[in-house]
Length: 332
Image (cartoon, rainbow, N blue to C red; front, top):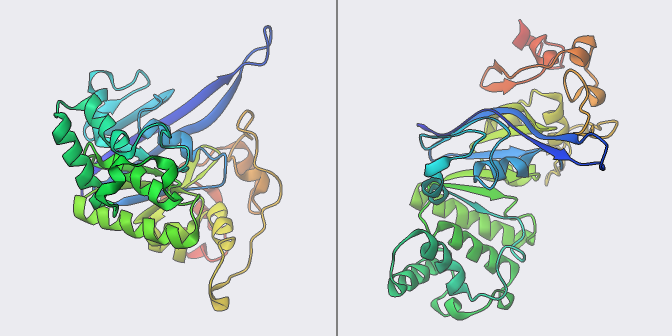
């Protein structure tokens, strides 16, 4: 497979003003994130709230330009200055589905107008051609032709998310960024939307970047998983490897907190002490060191880089040195 997305040292830093005379604070939402996404795969990005998942989604969809670093999408390079003349073409290649289906759709527009709007802006199709394509897309996501003339408030949450997915697909993108697409839905509806996404990916050869905090959902949809902590990737691994042999202490803690349907699948719960550090003032060294039971002086002064361990890339000195239980053989 070819890499359709390549990120190198992506950072997004916001200046937060504190007053007329005070120096602005720097909020480091994403810091030096490097990863690739292969064509046709699903890369899941996970982590607790505040880890930079949604900021990364806005960078990937060019809603924001990165403060630093480089992003290559389908062969086009996007730097801190933006995508330049290629922006319009890239916006048809990458589309986003937002978390909240109730806030993502304009309540004053009928569904037909919502679906046709991307075509009005980006193509020269006639009104008849736009309508024909919108009705075909409604069928593609499991809705009926009569839904074309209705308003969003007339639909359930699951139906609204189907409409949002249909709108994202109107320009025939290659990549969909799915920002918590099922977290606002009932569990039974979640399964329907996930099945729809899997079916669309197979039929349309789509690449998904699936952002979520729900590791039980990620287990069913992802090919690879990237775990983020305080704006940085700390572990990237194939899904089966990550769930069977998590290496980073933070990944282990996240997985231990995932509910299990069968009692025999429940492992020992790992409880993290302390709070998530402030992104305004991240700790020196490894950003996870204040909460990590395996941290030593090196962890508190030096930042670990992603390093290959088997099929996983892990940023952790304890893993490098074989100080984690069960990973001693990796250091040998």
